[in-house]
Image (cartoon, rainbow, N blue to C red; front, side, top):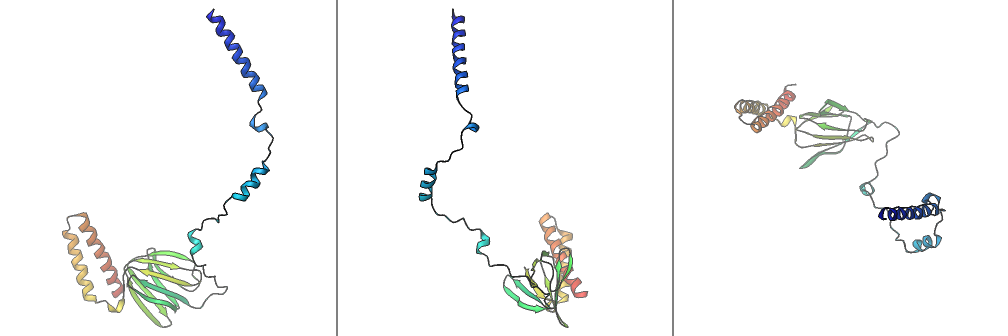
Length: 203
């Protein structure tokens, strides 16, 4: 009796399901109608919001690239505590990039390069001014402007060679007696910097 009742019940459920499946249309078969009344109402109350501004919207426009090659390179040489050169027009500048000494002339391709300890020379006619740089970055722009930022810099003619030799000897001794990785790293950095200064003075 129970088996017969369960069979009848399953038949009735199946019949109802098949009827609803045949009578209900798929979503893809529905007509694509738009509620024009809703759209017009939304336009009346929709907030008038401008798109958010990005950081580039607050920046000054980039200087235009000159159509002809300039005859001079404009150099801005900046340290954390002073501006050594501002808008200085020179013939060439040679910077100590991590990839090697880089000569920069007017019309140089736009580049960003990291600087290592070494000599930067500024050439203006027959006059050459040399600086020793500890580290920094150089930004070379398409309009023949070079922005050079250094952590420390000093004119080469202000360096005492005897003090360089003494510092090199002191850091060499510290490296030999270092017992920790920190002491070894500090001594190695001191040796590299003083070696670069010494090479600049003797070269």
